[in-house]
Each structure stands twice: as structure tokens, then as C-alpha cells.
Length: 321
Image (cartoon, rainbow, N blue to C red; front, side):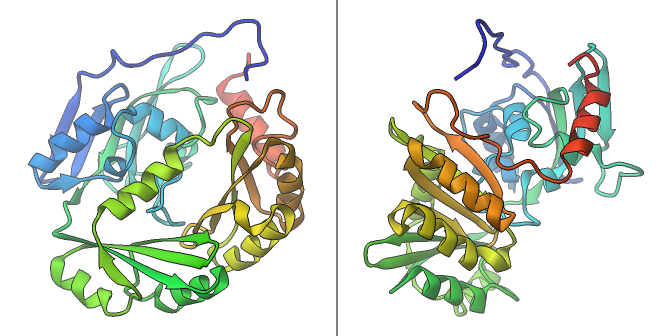
């Protein structure tokens, strides 16, 4: 809930005229108000795709970049910020600022493009972006394997993760153990070759779509969804610590490539997870809590050692706060 008597809602829906796609160069320059679904449809006709196509179709390009939402496809080196080549931003004083460009190797000095991605509008309002495009995959293969425990699933994923491992993977705990859901996309021959390394049987693509929707659906009233993240190599420790703090049943999804654990807890248990993240030096982010009332802890987690630097950067962009 907003701790303010009133607020202003900023809607960039009318900044949506420009969709310039250069299929040969593999780039697209798009206004912030363009819907993700509209861009994905235009790209599909040209045999192209982008990581934005994996996000909620009703969302906007600018909103997606500003929030950088977690998706099951993400890994440490496969995030939205890695696919943005250039960006235009309206600063707090009304000036337009530009960063990056229209080619892959375009950064000299500070990489401000990645600084804006996930900044939630605190450094400025993203008004336009140039994105890297990829060839649309020939084949998509979703597989599901069952394991007697969450740790067994993590070990199985680690054994096939590299080289040539799954493009994406998610572990879903349940009362009987855990399901490992993997997704391979790309050249049909390469996908079929990699499939021999991945445990599980092929299932319809709807299984992966359901996983995406589960991460975007808010929890019920009285419950909060929290994401804890560390290094992918520490994800087993993160799972054990989370289960020890709030119970194994609270774990919803584990994304081993991203080093992230998504838990759903009662609102009153938020401080306990906060303390767990602080003890492990992990990132904590309370993503959704529809009826939590006043936040019982900092929803962005324990202050990092870089907080002073972060505030200094924010002050440079918005000196009048």
C-alpha cells in the first residue's frame, strides 16, 4: 500500500507509434507504450523473437524494462538487461537522455542501459528502447522428470546443465518430492541432441506456459510471494535455509539457473524470511503481498554494502528527489 495521501499514475500507453524492425540487422526500436504482445506478433511474422516475447502480452515494453520481472527462462547471463542495446529516458527535470545504441558493442564508459533495467522508474522514465532480436526457434521441447526430493532434482539438473544443457529449468516441490521441468529451444537437430542429456519425458508446451503464469499470478489475500536469490551454485543451501525458516511446503518454484527460490508465506512470516536472506547474504524481494498492510520489513531486503553508492547514483539522476 502507498504511504501517501495521493499519488500520480503515469501511463505511457499513448507513446506507442514507433515499432521499427530491422530483421537483417537483428534489432528493433520500440516506443515504451507498445504492448509486448503486439511486438511479439510483428516479430513472429518475420521469423524473429526477443526475450520480451516471453513476458505478459498485456504488459508494455517500457514497463517490462523498468520492472525486469523474473521468468523461468532467466539465468545469470540471460536477462532482459542483456538484450537491450539502447535506451531513451525522460529524466526528472524533463530532459531526454540516451544510452547505448543500435549495435551490440556500443558501450564506452558506464553501461547505463543495464542500470535503467529494473530500476522501477527511480532514475527516469523509459520512453524508447532498441532491442536485440533472435531467430525464432525451430523446435521447443518441454520435459518433466520426477524426483523423490528437491535436492535430488537439483543434483540431476546440475549434472546436465552444461555443456549443452537445457535452455531453462524449474523445480517444483510437492508432497511426493519435486518435478524438474526443462525447456529446450532452438535448432531442431540441436534440441533433439541435447534432449538425450535431459531426464524426463516430453510433455505439451502448455506445461511451460502454466509455469510462466504461476509466477505472474498474485498470491491469495493474507499470503506474500517472496523471491530469494544467490549464486546458482548456492541454490541448494538457499532451499534448505528457506525450508528451515518457513517450511518446505512454502517453496513454490526453484530456478537453479538463476539461483532463485520463490516462496509463498503468510504475511506474518515475512520478517523470518528477511532474516534468513540477511544471514545468507542473499537477495530478498517481496514481490506480491495483496493485503499485508504496513510492510513488516523492507520489501527490497537487507541493505547491501553498495547502498551508499546506489543512493549517490540516484541523487545524480534526481537531485531534487
